[in-house]
Amino acid sequence: MKYVPSNDPVEQFTARYDRERSDLFGADTLSGPAFQGEEEFIRFADSDYQADRHWAFEIRPEECALIVVDLQQDFVKPGSPMFVPEAYRQIPRVKKLIEACREVGMPIFYTEHSIGSDTAADFYEYWNPIAEGALTEGAANTKVYEGLDPQPGERIIDVKHTYDSFAGTNLDYALRDAGVKTVIICGTMTNFCCDSTARTAYFLHYHVVFGDDVCASDNAIVHEGTVRTLRRGFARVMNHRQIIDALRNGDTLFQEARAAREASKQAAAVA
Image 1 (cartoon, one colour):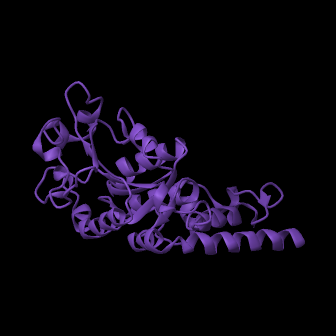
Image 2: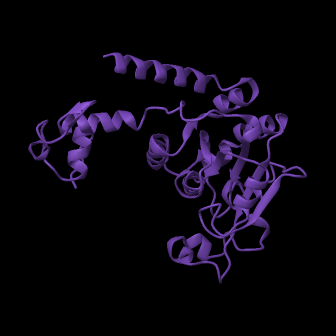
Image 3: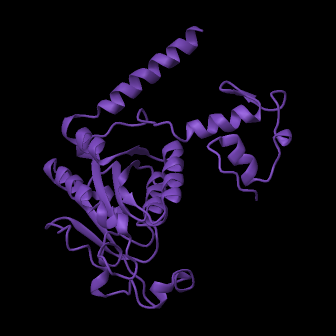
């Protein structure tokens, strides 16, 4: 693979896949309403990964729940073996989001990732800190970060042995029992547990809101790559201020985006 320091998506694409521009298909082979030929196709896709889908569904507080993914001692407390610095720095934003959810009466769920010797699968091979004792099932350092202070009635999903907050847990049962249709996701890490949880929520037919600035990773590039993929096909990607505003004041982003989308459809039909 060649490395080309470029912001041009076509140059990035050809370098990543070790292609020449002459290898790309022309308009006679690849065309669509938004592109003619593969170069335009690549540029269209690059733009589409950055296009918000706020028209997809409306955020209604009475149908929502907040899932706080793995903001626990081992990931958030400085000096811990799995410490994610950006997760620690985002705690004030997460707390504002939690308070807004409490204010409108939404259910809040916290997950705690832990590993036991009989639930480790390949975790010991991929993560040296876990093999050396981090995230050990039953240990105090797997508990929700002390700065978040879960309140009575806010459920803690404390049996979670993999990235996905739904796999082998009672989260889906509890969400459905609460009448939840839309999940709002924050936590760490963006590209592992938050991403896995968002995708499964989508597969289970929940609407998904992904908090771009309240989900943290250890690498900015993979954070952005994850967010782009979720935005294009899984979730409404919003920052914490936008989410809070939608909960408190109504989902104007949805209303505006849906109106613009309908107007665009009508204009296309006339044309």
